[in-house]
Length: 69
Image (cartoon, rainbow, N blue to C red; front, side, top):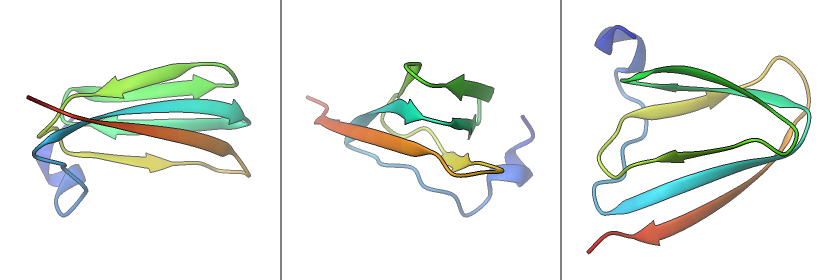
């Protein structure tokens, strides 16, 4: 994915994030590509990785954050 598409998006420098889709669907755009997730899917975004979540309809996400050593 082009870096310009993610300019200004979130990048947590000292935590990994795991997104779990509880209902609906969501796309997670990262500097490594775009990932389309549906109910019960999960994705881990490593610390320092620019990312954003987007959806075209209602979705419920759970985000777990883990500090990196």
